[in-house]
Length: 197
Image (tube, rainbow, N blue to C red; front, side, top):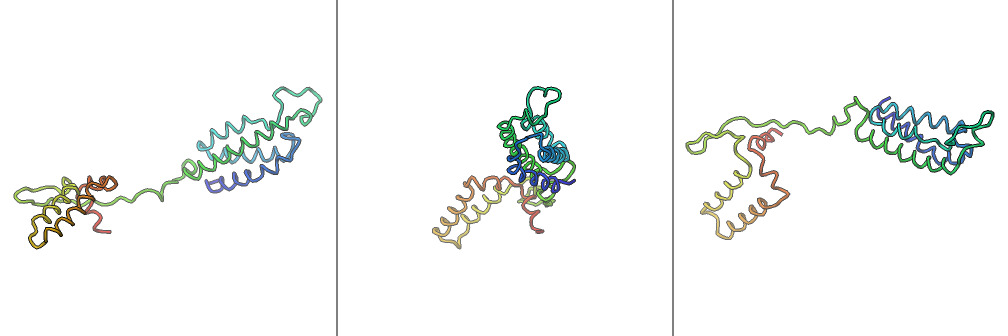
């Protein structure tokens, strides 16, 4: 069974819990025994992602008495219905937890994160000449490029002081924005790698 089948099976067993509350014979009931076996099989099929929940589920007695039943007596004469109801509620949480774990991580051995992985963005490679220096593109940060823009604006004689002020204020707001600050640490090779998109 793959993760989807296991989740489907566990959801089906989860839906049966309310109807099982009517079983006054508790674990002595064939319906409860059958349901318990289905839950155990599904959790067991989940492998290591269901192991802890399976262990906790198997520890539940579902109304069975703590002590051994005397010889010749029937189990249903010794069941504890209130304990049965509490253990059904506990089993709800264990089943729901197993469903959630499988939904997030999948079954061990299945690649649940295949769609979530970021695709690898190629990096630009090479060097640029700045004045008399040869510099690798991976040694220049986006912040340094931003500082260059600010200097270009300041040196531009075609812009009025008001326009320069407006543009540099906007650039400063961007530079000082804590949400954008991680972007400014990116190197130019990573930024230019997006040009092919």
